[in-house]
Amino acid sequence: MSQATDTDATVADTGVIRSVSGPVVTATDLDARMNDVVYVGEEGLMGEVIEIEGDVTTIQVYEETSGVGPGEPVDNTGEPLTVDLGPGMLDTIYDGVQRPLDVLEEKMNSAFLDRGVDAPGIDLEEEWEFTPEVEEGDQVESGDVVGVVPETVTIDHKVMVPPDEEGGVVSETKEGTFTVEEPVVVLEDGTEITMHQEWPVRDKRPTVEKETPTTPLVSGQRILDGLFPLAKGGTAAIPGPFGSGKTVTQQSLAKFADADIVVYIGCGERGNEMTEVIEDFPELEDPKSGNDLMARTCLIANTSNMPVAARESCVYTGITIAEHYRDMGYDVALMADSTSRWAEAMREISSRLEEMPGEEGYPAYLAARLSQFYERAGYFQNVNGTEGSISVIGAVSPPGGDFSEPVTQNTLRIVKTFWALDSDLAERRHFPAINWNDSYSLYRDQLDDWFRDNVAEDWPDKRQWAVDTLDEEDELQEIVQLVGKDALPEDQRLTLEVARFLREAYLQQNALHDVDRYCPPEKTYDILGLIKTFNDEAFDALDAGVPVEEITSVDAAPKINRVATTPDDEYEAFVAEIEENLVEQLRALY
Ligand code: ADP
Image 1 (cartoon, rainbow, N blue to C red):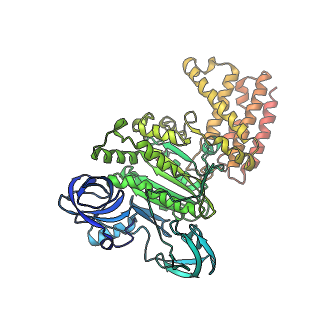
Image 2: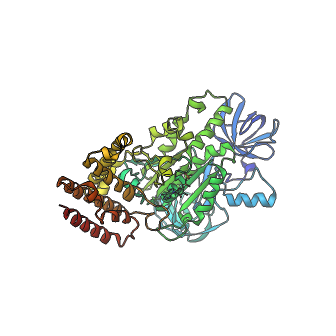
Image 3: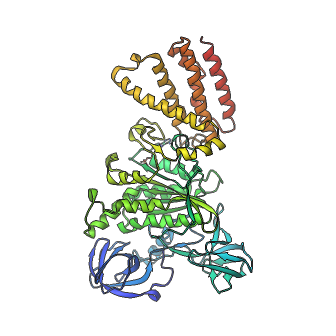
């Protein structure tokens, strides 16, 4: 993030530190505007103006402030906090203010610097192969693609006219290898277009229109695609009590969801968890291309031992990067883990500012900030005529798993999909531990047409049957707890058996199994169809007077549980075989 230009050259004004309280510093005699980036103290720690009252300017500082004291200078750059956008963001791990971690480490080790280190978000020296997509004499407008750069083995980076440039007639195009700062296309009025753009993180990048999303972000997870689908451009929340499978679920989504680009924001989770992510992700393979998953991923890592203000900014850094790829026409999946830590950072800064606290000490603007963030998700018509989407999946970590706390509650009011991870299910080793009674998706109806057209006409009907059966099981389980299973009438006992297949063969999915970790929607549908066939045939048998025990002991039944782990090119034959045997064996009972 940027100090794209040299600090000294852009200093607009210099003030003096009056007080320091953790990440919050006040200064006097500073001519500043809200959200200006400033450099604080002798060491030049990066900060941002968050309040101006008379002659006193309040700054949140993105680095540790110990040792900084009154009287030291504050330099204002006069520029808002921006991200550097351009090739090189993928396959990179940043901190919350877009400093590449590897560059930071290098600088810190070599020069014994630990603070005040600045590093551009993209490498200014690296050269990229640019191929123009416009010719001399072409008219280009704001946002238009003027050329491409193979950014990674998987992704082509589109070089665009920046949104704040009007465009014009192309007078020169270049082809070959260039750094991000060298002009690659020149317009008649002298405007030089480079591969590098800057954008203020707190402003959303312009689009033409936000459309109603009608395409699912297919995840390959049966419970999600089947029961609680997320739309491309949709919003989802996933609460993650410890050990409930949050990391595994998120990695499955990162790997298998049909997004072109993944932006993963690790926001202030415990240091070691984030280290896990930083170590794990670069090892992961992209199942679609066989390349490294990082070739289409940008990681932003802010551990809780990094300063609190950098946590506050990391979600904005992430979403601005996501918007840049959306502008290229890509479908981006952004995961923020966890938004609770982000909210806590807001709370801490707010309390330092002595603002009036709201619920549980969170600032009154918590709800507004959360909705401004999720608002940047969507399925968009871009300025350059392409369509792109940002789907946002925000993890929440409610203390003690209590969903009534303010961050969870405010998030639930905004997002349209809720995947309730449940520690009880995880304890029972039911994975993914997503509670089907508490979860929901408000996109279901608008995605039905897609599933009807692309998978099966009766997709919504079969899903409804599964939902009803699971609901019924839930009610019956309450009775079973009181009086035991044997006290139930036969038809209800049979319903429990059917529901057990739904849970074990359909909802459960082993993320660690080579085949089962990804389930195409067709297979999701077929497994459900098979359980429905069993249900229908079994109830016919019951009606004809066959006892439940006999029905459930036909030897084709347990095979239903093996479909999920049967390879994609073999499972259809296997499903057909089980179906045939089920019909034959169940009808033979009466
Ligand atoms: P969290 O991040 O919520 O603390 P993890 O994602 O690390 O939890 O999951 C804890 C353990 O649960 C994993 O090590 C794994 O053994 C198991 N697990 C979670 N989800 C699945 C899944 N979908 N399939 C198989 N095992 C799972």
